[in-house]
Amino acid sequence: MAQPKDFGFGAEERMVRDGARKLLREQAGIETLRKLVARDHREAYESAVQPARFDERLWQQMVALGWTALAVPEAAGGVGMRTIAVAALAEEVGRAALPSPLIATLIGTAVLRAAAARGCEAAAAWLGRVAAGEAVSLAATGTDGGWEPESTDVRAAATGGGVTLAGSAHFVQDARKARFFVVAAADTGGVGLYAVPADAPGLMIHPDRIVDLTRDQARVELRDVAVDGAAVVAPPGEGAAVLADALPAILAIVAADMCGAAEWQLQTTAEYARVRTQFDHPIGFFQAVKHPIVNMMIAVDRARSLTYAAACAVDAEPAEALRLARMAKAAASDAAAFCSDRSVQLHGGIGFTWECDVHLYFKRQQHNEALYGDAAYQRGRIAEMLGDR
Image: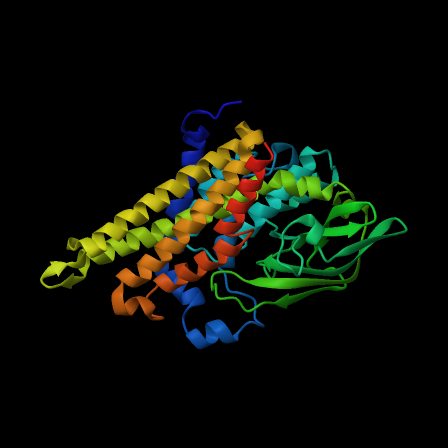
């Protein structure tokens, strides 16, 4: 199946993108972001025991607009839009560096949707909860940092009519904002996926200290957490396949967030180059400034094209989706690193200060680069895929 024209980006997708851009520009601009997460550097980095700040009123508006329901199938109470629309929304979230559990929820939705597509009936009920506005986060990473299902440190044991989960999931995104987790756990039958409420007895959240101020991360510990059959969103032996099915969408979502943030870095740096003068000229007059800004633009456009191609392929060309998604994540990571570096350098002496807002995006991009594998990791996996052909 060939990809449609313009990656399938039509009127509905433009409506999602434009509506998100308008709302976030009006209610989540840079001034709001600074007040929310960066009012004081001591408070920002010494309050790890407190839940990461986000605008819960804005979250409810986002839910009312159907953002959490965007990727949920209509049969489960959602909007059922294609992955390209989800990528467009994620790009606007990245452009605003929005502190919210939306990116984690879109990733969790991709996993639940993949489980439902494989006939896991319990997944539909949890998708309905996402559509209704409950934030979800994927808890599938082991202590070694590998996201692969086999790396999970959580073990599952059948107990009567239910399952008991024990162990820890690491690097869980926006854990303190999530209402439930999709936990990967292994038993003798293989890896399964289980939906576990955040307030389940025995579940403990241990916050990590991370550089990114726009979200939080944690280790989720499960001390003999008991769940019933309704929580089994993928039975043992099916979890690894479900995660593999969801991976292209996951990588496309993270890449889209990075493209949006890189676009902000590009536009903000270009505007600064127009108004900052030196030697009686705007600094953008000089080749040492204008050429790196052009290179920023090229890097962003390349990453965005690959990201939209990957998002489109999830629905239109599934056989190519993983390869394109890895290419997109690698290109977006490169663009994030380059635009972060140039945005700081081209802001001159103030670029290194707390008062210059570029640091908020720099830190979000650093976090995104590592999330689900950086550029070098993705290229290594692409090489393996090509070698197997």
